[in-house]
Length: 254
Figure (cartoon, rainbow, N blue to C red):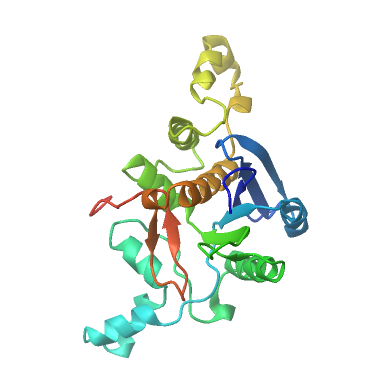
């Protein structure tokens, strides 16, 4: 699979009226698509791409009990393993101070957005996508996590993403990593005393939290394919690995 004419897509399961947000980067890491919609909108866009790597901000399947078995080996009784109902990837990231939602072992116990993610992976695999790093596969899938990815890029826990400063911080670190997106510093050039008093801010210079999450996923796909040594796979391959855009993690981000 050649880098030329390959599109790198990040998909965020944002829920709400538009449950999916997706971002696409070209082979030069320039933003070429950014939209929200239904699963069919995402599938329709991806169906037109011949060569693509897609990163999804959701687990592909429930956990397989790996963490529970590890706790058993350490001598924890079954009644004290309530916190073990998660995947190894989530357990390992938590050990670094990066808190993620645990993926339960039973599908019916998983929240709605995770179940939507399971269905998305299943549909894309049926459409001809292959797990990432499959030899000569022109359409590949991988999993990432936006909070963990931004933590890795920043070298610290990011500010809360619903806030103005949290969104600016995320946009700034993506721009600093040469993504072809709007420069967040232009936001400050547009802010004046008059507009602050009026409560009118140049929000068109900023991206939504969901768009930023989709973009960091697309960037992770880009990095994973362009330079595999610049990314890190966390967790068990069969259970589902989380790919992050960093070569290593700090011991702790707390």
